[in-house]
Picture 1 (cartoon, one colour):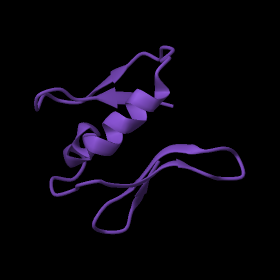
Picture 2 (cartoon, one colour; picture 1 turned 180 degrees about the vertical axis):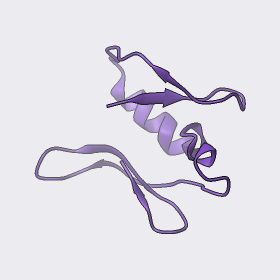
Picture 3 (cartoon, one colour; picture 1 turned 90 degrees about the vertical axis):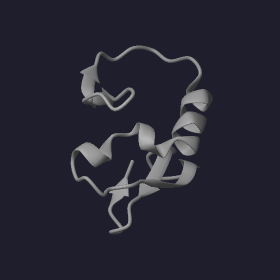
Length: 75
């Protein structure tokens, strides 16, 4: 899975995979700051709405589940 990050309006960039011990912190951060996922760089008026954390599936929980105004789903 590719991870991208954007900071202070700078262009998004791919970052290397690392272990993150505080998964709950990251889930909470995304839930409270969905704009930290730079989907607006793909389409200018895109805005995410996080609808669930730890969403249960047969394969295991989804850390953060979000949608946009068009109903597109983001995992």
